[in-house]
Image (tube, rainbow, N blue to C red; front, side, top):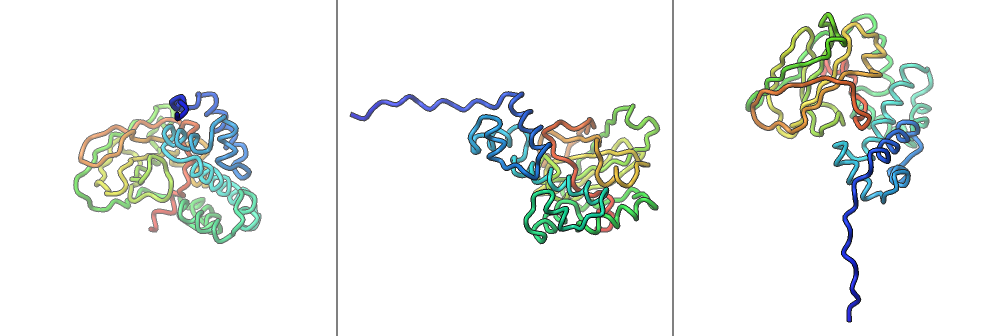
Length: 253
């Protein structure tokens, strides 16, 4: 006779404290940790941890760790004068070419050029620009910023289309606006997630290129047909990866 076995029990989602603890650990030591390390810390197998993390955050834990590493690299490049290869090693990359490629794909400029960009925008802050492309149908977005964030309405606001509900990679299209509470964006096939970021218009170059606490907005559902939506900007949750794209670099694309 075939022995009877108990039916497999569904794996419960990680408790909020367990997930929060794993996220805090990732933010403290992104260059040292792997997905397996985070899964062990949370008490789950890498497979189940990755699946549940993705369900909660919209991206996988590996993508999240890479985003944290690139964000750390941005801050090192802007505050120190170490060589690019030393920065790459400090954030956990063993290959300079791999680091440079990943950095450019997500930030928009190579690592060394980020420093030159900071010098340029210190003298000339970026002005509103548009990278919108024609599409079938338009989304009308109403912008809602907390009054205390920009009492004079002088925020620089980026609204763009991304393939994921997180700023992983460069946006497919978007626009940088100021002094407006509405924006119209043609739909982008393959990039249905509408994300927004806001920083004070007169923020210094460091805070424009690596904002420590930008206001963010993420429409909760993919947008594939014309409609009117509201983007409410708030401080990002811990599960949100940092804004990697150097927005001022996009105006020349």
